[in-house]
Amino acid sequence: MARPSLLAAAVGCLLAAGALIGCGGGGGAGAGALQTPVQSEEASERAEESTKKREEAAESARNRELLSEIEAKKKEETAETNAKKREAAAEVKAKKREAAALAEAKKKTEAAAAEPKKREEAARGKREAERKRQQEASRKHTQESRKGPTLPPIVTTNTAGG
Image (cartoon, rainbow, N blue to C red; front, side):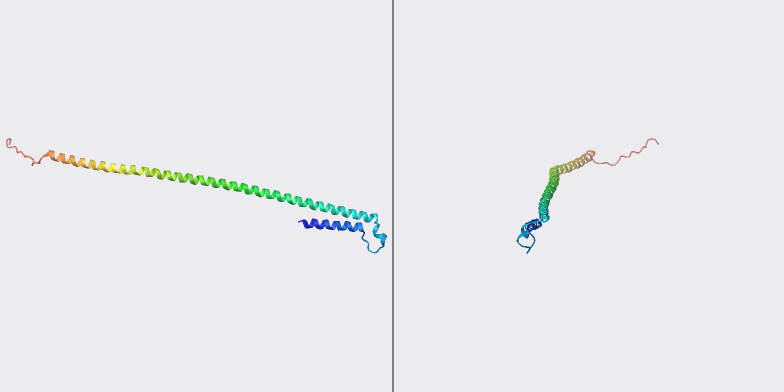
């Protein structure tokens, strides 16, 4: 990037030097030493233009550098914002996963705690059913033993009346 400004500076210096020394080649000793007012004015204009071009090139380079810095800063800020968003999303996701794992663990713990109770209730139900069955069997046995032996029914005939 610095080459165009260096080239412009070099051309400007050469033009200014050429104007001061004189552009004429074999005109004698007095021809190169004296400049006409037109030549002097042209040399001064060229020097001004050269200086102006150097200044514009330097300003353009400064502007490009500033623009580059601004763009770099914007990219850095955008990257930082995106990183913060990704980090926050990952944190939310991790909290959800942790909450789900805790809920699952609690569910398993409650199921494990309820299992012995279920078994106990089932065993109690079986014992109760067995006890009722035995009571019923005992009651039936007791009723049968109280009845005594069964005799055939007594049949009476009525012979007296006719």
